[in-house]
Length: 288
Length: 243
Image 1: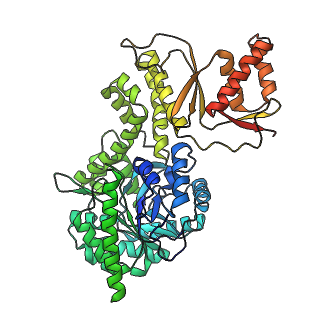
Image 2: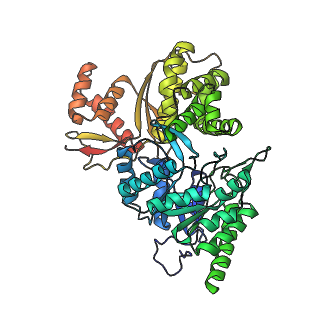
Image 3: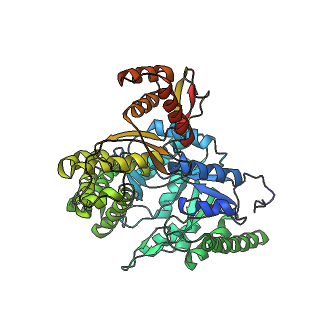
């Protein structure tokens, strides 16, 4: 099978990837579309789990490079980590030949209880200090590079705190970390809180960006945008991706679709659109 | 400060009624109620998939009340969404035993057993073949249930289930779904012993046959061989261990 891996090794993560989800796995793994260069998985869906999920992972690893994206390590939680989970995570990740793992800059739980959603951290120095320390702790525990992802949020922040972009950069610099830049999250936040998404991108140190996420989102009747990953990628997010790639260069881009999953051909049409943007933006950048 | 905000988020997302003080601390009443809805919807969704028949039997309102009461205890302790229904069931089944028809709690146990089997860990890699002088190695995805009602039978009778002693092996099939196999009392005790795997197959067979007053003659051996072959074919037995 020929994939868009350029001249790099089979396990290199480059170009456009797709999130491996239960609802699309059968068709994706059967058809093995060559335009999908790599897959992303959530470890929480696979750790200590057999059955269909194990089979999906085995088939995916056979044919694609894999990157992992955590949901529950809770970089912003104020309590100590569950050391046994970090050991379990390290064991799981160590078998996968991944170039990095990523996790959200958010609050995922408190007092050993889990929200199963990504709740916002206040953009304060205290939260930046806690998140950066925890990022270092997880990175050391899993013995792999750990990229943080900027999250979407819906509740306004207190006015005497940092801007979101400054907060993200603060955490990156404190932890000397890399970034999984979620373009859809920036767009959603910019519309919900009326800021310029390109100004946000401009503040991000380009050399820290190792991966990009794009997705669609839901617009409620009251105008609030919710990061559902359940809609097609809107044009504005494609445009912001183009702007971002021209800044950061050819880092791998993942299409996230977690809900309301359409037939694979619809997702592959979005993958094609992402490839067109990716090639245009990165070739123009190299030409310049 | 962050710790105080995090605990307020927990109370807002999971509490029976979010307090105005917590909503004020977090800064936006309307938007934090959006978070509450998002958090609860995700959890309720997976619970309703896992316990679909129980929910229908109990009714949306009573089922939802129990889920709310459980959320009010502070939210899930598991980071794995697939284990959330089991946490709810641990809380809810003792309640339903007291408030619902007697078969309802067994239906919930059956659905949670099936859900757990479907999402169970990978099977162990046995070091040896299954043999009478070895300890058995079973799939991780096997459960034994002993019910007073045949809640696995569908459709559910309109008047509910009538008592009928029911022994079931729930296992994950090659299609990755949960299946059942009916057992007699002796086979159920054998499966129970083989799941514990603290004695050889021969020792367990002798002990359990004696307990049931069953002679180990040709007829018994023939039935035992058929049971073992069937368990191997279904992936319930995966091998043996000399340890």
